[in-house]
Image 1 (spheres, helix red, strand yellow):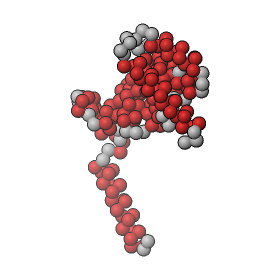
Image 2 (spheres, rainbow, N blue to C red; image 1 turned 90 degrees about the vertical axis):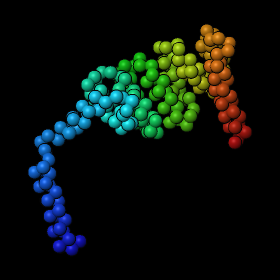
Image 3 (cartoon, rainbow, N blue to C red; image 1 turned 90 degrees about the horizontal axis):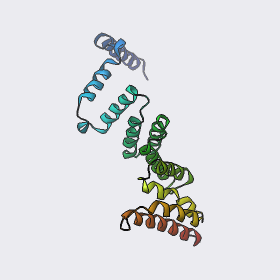
Image 4 (cartoon, one colour; image 1 turned 135 degrees about the vertical axis):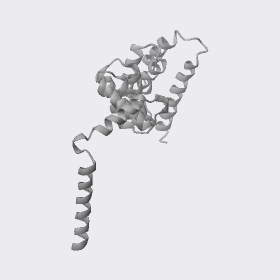
Length: 197
């Protein structure tokens, strides 16, 4: 870099700094953001873009630091954006605030399963099982929780678990078909492994 170019660059930086100090408010750095937060808080939620919704949820998390819901919905946004690790951290944050928050247990289990290549591993199975035990309406979670046992050959234990879950359901309940689909996926994967494919 030539000397005149260096002087021009330094001059430009100093001019920009001088303009900021003259026109800006360096001691009130958070004021514009606070105004923006107030504007977001006043708007209809359905009119917010994902980044605006994220900002509003972060504001809600600061206002009520013990509430799991803002962190849960932050995770939902991260999941929709394909940010698996960030979504996992957000759902974990929700569960640190309330380890019985069923939506976050299920969402975290789904993200762990996704991270693990779509397989229900023991880690995600434990989360699904806890969600089902807290809320027996979480039939899908209960069914998924026994897949690792089925996959490793403990078919009797898996079938006994599934029988308890399915017993109260109507014979035409589509969730019965969901179980057959889960089992078929595991069976196909096992056959592919045994045939070397």
